[in-house]
Image (cartoon, rainbow, N blue to C red; front, side):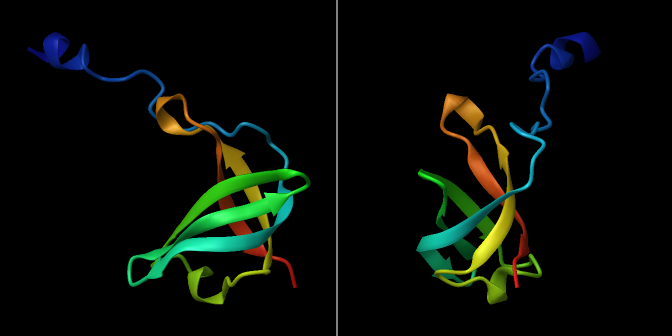
Length: 91
């Protein structure tokens, strides 16, 4: 039975970064800003990237529209566009 159930495991479950660089961008807008956290779009250069923040992430209450943040890009599941994972706020 172990072999049977292992056949359903998707290879490479962990997300890998698209780029190893830490990028810098500005929060453009929020789609949701509620008791579950925040999600929206940030802009870096001429590109916009989706991001989401858990309510438990220590920077969530501090991030507002026009905040400048440092982030990394990760591929999205199911072949969709990449998304940003915010790492810090630029002072």
